[in-house]
Image (cartoon, rainbow, N blue to C red; front, side, top):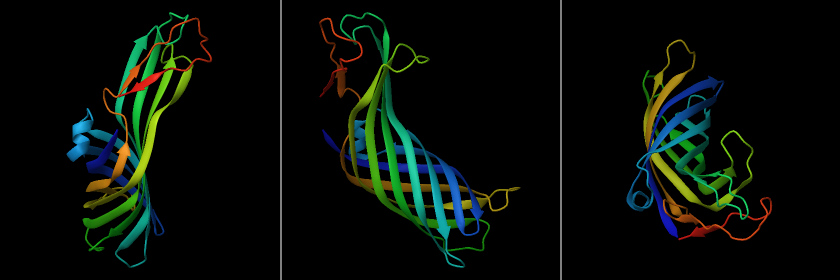
Length: 216
């Protein structure tokens, strides 16, 4: 099933430290799905973490760099005793729907002398979505089986802007608030109700018979 990925991202709470003309920082992000994506996923908020590295040109209102992001847009746990034929032990099936992104960043800062520094930002790169599962007796025990249910990637871009505030007591440190609109190509990804476990029958072998997944 192919859906278009369209999401509005509210990104906030970033700290950055300057070393010469390089700037590194981290973000706590929150995304809100819109358009077709909103119709297909069972979440109204996407938490993500990201890190950014920028190079600031000397005496120029331009920054370029790279940002990497990771988040989970869905998760589910099932406890069953019919995963493997011939075994009636309870096992946990954990499935996470993961979002990763790598973007080249271009920023324009119209004012370099004010305490509050606004900026305009354009990003371009790729989104990679994948769904993983793990089976184990409990959260504290070793994984019996793991794998990917589905994966896909597509070109994506972001357009937005924000403002930077100086952090007292941290030389070169800044707090950054920004908002971006993201769009991109169509992707295949799993949503709520797209997978069902099909128990096998027979004598089987715990170590060699894989879990069967049905895609709707």
